[in-house]
Amino acid sequence: MAINFVPLDKEKHKDLKVAVNTSFSFAKGTHLAAASIREFAQLAATMPLVFIEDKNTQRHHVVTMLGMEQGQNLFLTGDSWKGPHVPMNILRYPFDVRPDGDKLGVFIDENSDLISDEGQPLFTEAGEASEFLDSRQKFLADLANSEMLTQRFVAKVVELDLLDPIQIRLTYQDGKQRNVTGMMSINEKKLLELPEEQVLELHKQGFLGAIYAVMMSVGQLNRLVELSNDTENPIRSMQLSAVKAEEAAPEAAPNA
Picture 1: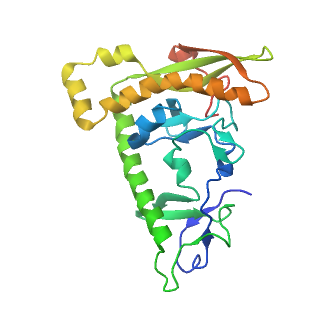
Picture 2: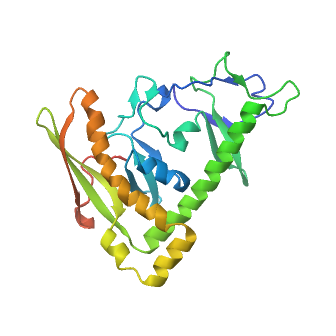
Picture 3: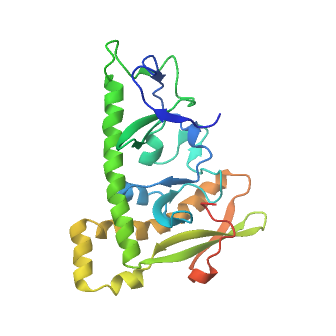
């Protein structure tokens, strides 16, 4: 069933309940998840972080790679998550924070399988937010604040021209090969060549640690290769390389 996010309304949704369980089946086809700066360190320990560009808006975003191809989430075994950290943008579901008029509002996917008669109520009989909804709203507020800081971080990285396109060359067990493109990462040489005052500014803004977390996370591509052993056609080898911008036309872009 198609996703249908609507503003959460205490009258319309007064009887709505949301299941609280460890099932992540809704993320089965999610190969990229938006990453927020406050979780970079945790994410970088288990999964790669890369930059992608929205060609329509020309805005850049930081995402975590959950698979090497569309519709593939290598961190799921059945409904269970493999790994110690789940991205906040997956944990938030079936809720989201979106513009609602001139402010941000809480939205809910009315078609979510997590909406259940056996779940936690969202509102009390008096029409007030339940303890469950209150905790979800606090989580969403933290996520929204982190995402705003992430946007400033990305803008700074782009302003300093620290990004270069990268390409992943995959060879599968059956001998087939493919390129994964459409991604960018931070060029360490460009970072080291920054003037001292700009490096100090990045440090004061709390962005320097985030930059190194992104750079270190690239090594977690090997983790994806390892996780692919549970698929029908495991990845046999992987080669990561930088590519010139004019050569970065996607053959199999992760965001395509």
